[in-house]
Image 1 (cartoon, helix red, strand yellow):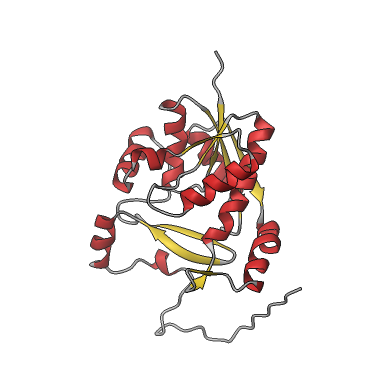
Image 2: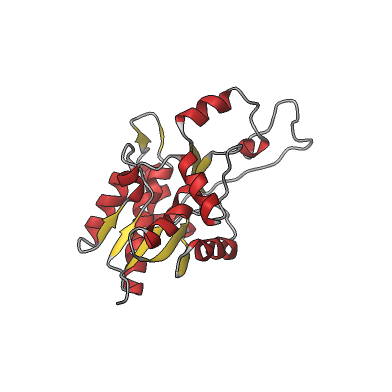
Length: 227
């Protein structure tokens, strides 16, 4: 008997990397990883290879940067869209776009369900769920992270046991959600966050910042144009 197919919103981070195997082994699906590139600047071939090694039968990597800028970033800028009236929307803007491509991949591969790695405590679960339901109410939505509340320590151990390559480690547990519009959040367990505050910050977490003691030697120009 052939297994049903599911399309996973695949970032290539710790959570979704282990979810590829969990959806296959524990939920009994053939997994198609879907990555909508909104400016993370990842190596597409390497990303696809890692998804397949984790257990995916296919990996869709969609260049969605122009679509993201045109349909989401510029309208948000024009509307002065602020999260709770405080800071500009960034990661939240990408979720409906990712859902759009999840549905497209599900139709292409004949999948009966889609999955995401959002937890049960944040807003992303609502963004993904409502966007998918609005576009394809027939598709089942599976959210293992919400159902199981998998800690990052547990995910790291699972990845180690199953030989899944992940970009996180116990020394560097943070997952950074970035796109061409911003770099707003880091994910890690509360215990790891507390512990990390006592340690010197690693250079990897300062990729878009420069220490005042090490300034650039020459100025640079940055120009922006809006339609």
